[in-house]
Image 1: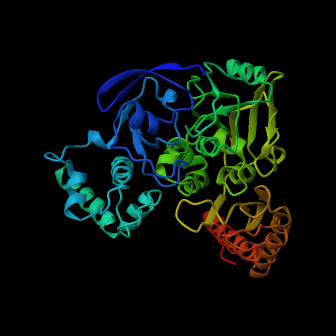
Image 2: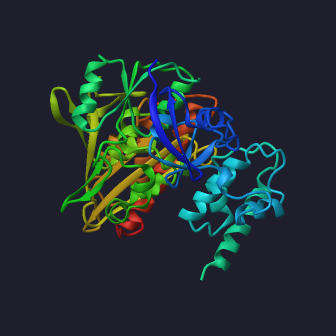
Length: 160
Length: 291
């Protein structure tokens, strides 16, 4: 099977690799690059755990082939912050106990990042609808919604 | 790896895409948004030998306004339809419906050409194409052609599209003056495929219904128009009796599937309720008097 050379920027670092066309972006991130922050759940676009940003838009990295990301900028959960320096959304997840096992969290964070950029999220219903494509089997979602609400409010306060 | 192996071709033009499809002799698939295709590849329900990626064809994603109609490039993503000012102004029913299509991450990738060509029997875009009398422009080895939405959808996941053909753009007439619209959908969870959905436009003239259009999805092998109900409404004054008769005709004209999500009877009942709401909203927006 022929491979294709690709050049992809992930979290600010540019990588050049040869990939088989059928390699999913999620597996490219985890197995080829060793960036295991992105989690893989259902592998058919239902659970949202593998959500990353490609050129600024949230996408499911199990529904995109790595070869399609040639030339693209990919942002994963690892770009948001570090344990010592979390971003607003991560802080809110921490404060509001928005995770238990943490498996869905990378997808939740990347989805919420795109939601906050594109929608007003004026009501909790808007937040619930925005997150409805991301499955969490621990929290019952209540604390996740609260965390996103808190992050939205904080971002609003910070805006001039 | 999840999918079976395939060769990958990046098409730089519509001609190149058609040539790659023709060269694969029916064994190729077009990769557009991939939001329906890639799950089927991951499950190995499909094993195409070639994927023709059309995402890098220039000028295939656009929304263009002309005096009487709107033309939408096949690679236009759902999120763009949801947020386009041109769509909001001239075809607001599309913007409303897009919010019911899956989730943001899916809408960021999914395309209008892909959704129409995939023709899921519960998807919104085939229903909208039927409602709005859309024309699909198709490119193939034989040249370019046009097909009306009414003739395009043949069955579940089956459309009138040859193995070497691709949809390139979709032309939709603007809503006529004094025309209102409505849309209603019920799904088990937000973003799921519709159990049933209905949408309508009503054009009012001198207090009468000049033209009624009703389309439905989730209720048969393909999305369809409620032709019998439309015929009842056309040229008449909207009364409560006529309204009820139209809803009865909507229900009589569908053949919904039973599956683990809902029974056929439930879907038949539901599509009547949703068509009624869509008609009521359409009449209100058309400036019609309450019956």
